[in-house]
Amino acid sequence: MSFNILFTGDLSATGIFSEKINRNIEIFDNELLNIFKQNDQIVCNFEGPSTSLPTILREDISVISPQNTIDY
Image (tube, rainbow, N blue to C red; front, side):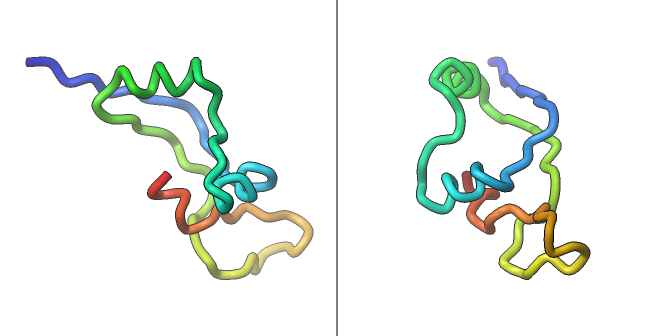
């Protein structure tokens, strides 16, 4: 029996990606989705917190991802 784990680089779900995730619109292209589907688990370096709390450091830069990004 084999178990495949894919390790990726950074994943940031801010900006336009945040908007798409909130509207349940896919952010990855089909080629990348096919690679993901070939693995049992995917591990990525998630950049920034996934929260509904407001940004407290700087109002002009958002590093917060929507809460449902974790499920995504």
